[in-house]
Amino acid sequence: MATPINLPYAITGIPAEPGKNGEVPLRLECNDWTKSQEQVHIDQKNLFNLALRFYVDMDPLDRDSFWQTAGIHGMPYMPWNESTLPQSVPVLGYCTHNSSLFPSWHRPYVVLFEQRIYEIMVNEIIPNQMPSDDKTQDSLKTAAKAWRLPYWDWAANNEVPLLAQDQEIEVFTKFGTAKIKNALYQYNLPQGKTFGTMGPASNQTYTLVSADGVPASTVDNGQVAKNIRNHEWYSTTEDDPTLRESVYRLLTYDVPYEVFATTNMDPSDVEPLGYLNCEYIHNNVHNWVGGAAGQMGDVPVAAYDPIFFLHHCNIDRLYAIWQTLYPQKWFRATKVLKDNGTWSIPTDNPDTQCTQLAPFRPNNSGTYYTPDTVREWMQFGYSYPELQPWKYKTTEDYLLSINTDIAKLYRATADHISDSYEIGTDKDIVHYDHVINIRYGKALYIRSRPPHTQPLQT
Image (cartoon, rainbow, N blue to C red):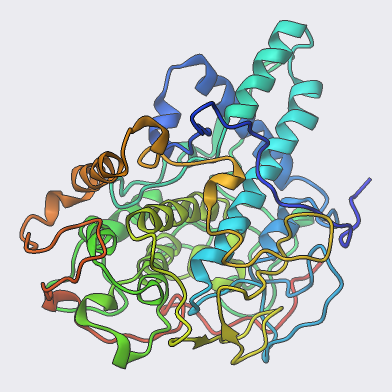
């Protein structure tokens, strides 16, 4: 029986009791996790593949289905987990883009996806598809409880994650070994329905990964890698930085929060260094992965490609690293940016640290999360490999470790950048880099088609 769409749903993350020093499970890099031969990771991968397959095959009328979760971001332009009317003109989904709310809104969104996968693991896959003996059941429940969504670090690894490359994957259940369709490879709409009648998603029942110059039904992982390596930004200069170099700059430039977070900036407030920001990098990765006609490059349907959540898991990681390095940087009362409007936010509404991040709620009441209440990510029961404060005796040692990790991962192609400033501090930066001193359009996914105006067919 489908869960009613408007029944309250609390987004709290996977239940986790912090260790004696505050330890929480880590979201791991996708390929590292995929290649790991540790038994717990082997069990987690099996559970994840089965759970994601179950998730995408659920009845789309079920509030807890993947179809409903993906639809929060854009199409089909309807309320989720509540009964509300659209606030923006034209009608849009809930996602906040070209907005200082961008990284904050997507944090509980990724947590929702992660939480649903876990719930399916423990409520459906383990009790119904796994061997029933107590030892196996207990071991798998432990593995599920320690699992967290992996992130795709596209700056360090330009290739489509190993987990998403094969059309079919091998899984193990109580019935033995079998092959199933890989839900990360391609998403098919339930009952073969289409996304609508406008834009690159027109009349397509599947999610493309890349379709530059190839037939519309093609998944081209090689083209994705080529797009990322070529890094053709939607605003270009003669010396465009690589994606790796851009992430290095993003994490080492000391700028106000809004300048880090969004493409929606006041030009008078932006130093040359500030034209590189988290949302701009994110937008380009969407375009490179989606190609000319793939869903990842089209805002209303981007979240229907499950790789969206591995991508945004990495965006959340970069956000959390930046928050740790610059803990005093936050929304400024003197620089309130106006929103473009979403399903729940009126057009030109001021975006502040108290703006409600609908439709995400911490409990079953009417309270929504806000940027203030999602600022601390470990409350959701996860962290990242670079962010393990419990391992260090002093804050200085912790920050030094983070900066060392950043340099090791991303500085290889950025050695020419001046060393005249100290990374990971709030000190003024005197180095100016002409390479990114550019102006670019503020619309998300610049190469995307116009927003869809037709509802998703059901």
